[in-house]
Length: 91
Image 1 (cartoon, rainbow, N blue to C red):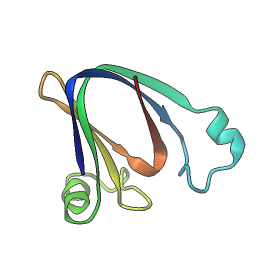
Image 2: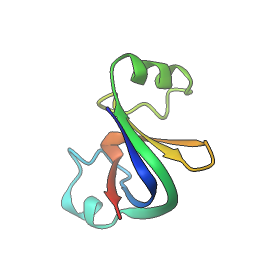
Image 3: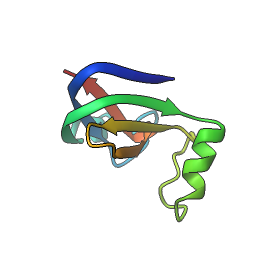
Image 4: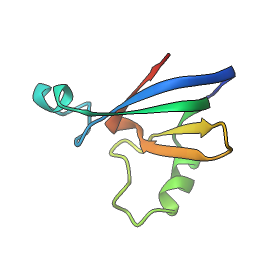
């Protein structure tokens, strides 16, 4: 699934040091947040697309559930995160 916006959006990511599905409440409550002001779209990838992402890592950035959040930025760059370790909020 790829979600593309008709205009650039602001997004905030809450990033957790542990998998959000199994982390205790205090980990979730004490997350780090980062903001992007230039997001034009996003997608959550799994399957073959996730395997392609994993093939480009040293193995330390592989998601526990093999799913990745990909942000598409206004300048053409992408930002990739382990989806099990982040929550995305759109503004």
